[in-house]
Amino acid sequence: MTARILVAGIGNIFLGDDGFGPEVMRHVVGRALGADVHPVDYGIRGMHLAYDLLEEWHALVLVDALPDRGTPGTLHIFEADHETLSSTAGLEAHSMDPAAVFATLSALGGTAPKTIVIGCEVENIDEGMGLSEPVAAAVPVAVAAINDVLADLAVRSPAPAEG
Image (cartoon, rainbow, N blue to C red):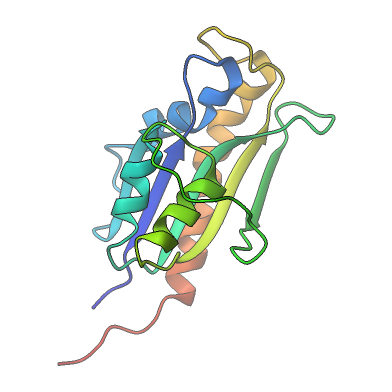
């Protein structure tokens, strides 16, 4: 079996820069990323992502907006620490807080795969459509980062089982 990787864009396109994940996925979905790479724009469908994570995945690449920590448009790539995320499982189908998604997954009996976050610091998350200039400029950088992360995961993926 080859490693399956889910690339998930999350965020609310009606809250300015929170739409970063869906905008990145608009540039990724439909591109040849490999037979076992599944790019999906989840938008605000947290419950859908939690249920999809019940399937067997080698890794999850999560593309999301991050709080502004001083430099909007700055991209951060890091491995999520599922042990320190704190949230309770809820039944809000449109909740897209990653901690709530992972808590729901756990409540459903699943285990989160290795999760790499590609996040962009936001400038504006007020109501309205469209990304701010610095966040929009980070979209092609994020697309390239997805390719880099996928290449790294391919190198680290488990060897296919022989049968």
